[in-house]
Image (cartoon, rainbow, N blue to C red):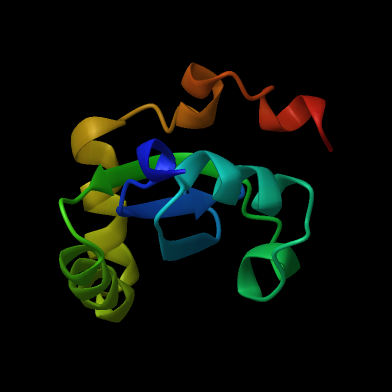
Length: 106
């Protein structure tokens, strides 16, 4: 559905200062669900990155993809600084969208 379409760049972590995964999606809530039920494979599944610690919404997929590629090239410290600007406690932001805390799904 069109109202579900929201280009978003996001970062997941497996714990505070743990492994990070940066991604881009047009449907953030569905993507979080896929990461959490492990139907989305790859790096995020291998490192168990399921905690949404940062996201940024964009007007178009083109700008989201460009930003996602930029962030993926960043070094780890830059990504941590980005997270800590808006989420210094590394809270699981997915809980705000109705998802259970990560510790409850492990």
